[in-house]
Length: 143
Image (cartoon, rainbow, N blue to C red; front, side, top):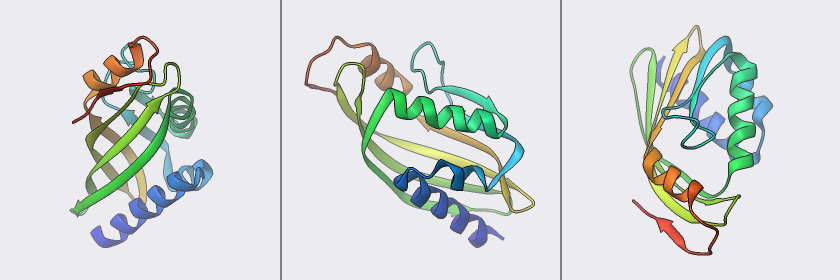
């Protein structure tokens, strides 16, 4: 089952790259727990959302907050119920033009062939510094 779950995650990343949120929502359980570890007051896209509507809200907030200029999942590992992915991302904050990049780890939990939980782990301190910085076209931070 772990290879099938990795394929589902890879398909989700491809859908994310196309901006196809409905394709991602289609492989989530109705009661999915979905989000990025961190505090929404630090970065708006942080926090855990419940259900498919919550997952859709996460993607809306992500798009509203930053432009992703590079998204690179690189390392995949799995067991019977989880897929672990390491990668990196580069972004520009929409509110101030501050750019940065960092590494991340995503953890997907599966139940009955669908994603029932997603947690994104990345440097929210770096994201918060970039998000709250004064507007200027400079690199805020990097990994």
